[in-house]
Image (cartoon, rainbow, N blue to C red; front, side, top):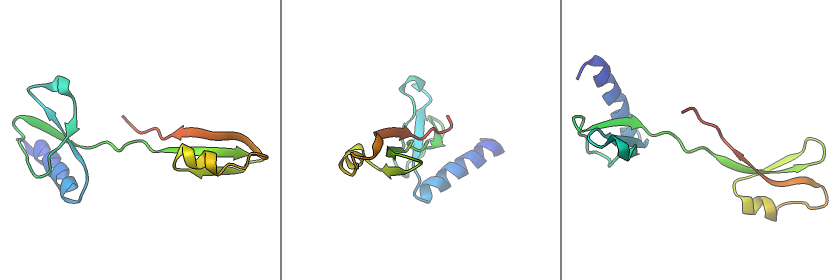
Amino acid sequence: MNRLDTRHAAEVMLHEADGGKVERLDLNNIQSGWLEHVVGHWDWTSFDYRVAKPEPKTIWINEYSGTNLCAHTTREAAVFNCAPITVQRQAVEYKEVTDE
């Protein structure tokens, strides 16, 4: 393990120690892709590790006349809380775009 590898390992392990999620890649079966890491078990010879990518957030917006918007965390909440007389678009889904 060189200095760069050691720095990467330290960053990933500290991220997990601080409560963050970590993913692992089986170097003998790369086709399996990145999977959730079992906390506290490290095998840097057989696996690569990375800080888990955050799940993109999704919100639902009710759009009203003018520039009035009302955001909700679920589609059901957007539909339930909609004012049908003045709504122009109901429960429009917006998904966050994250860096790959």
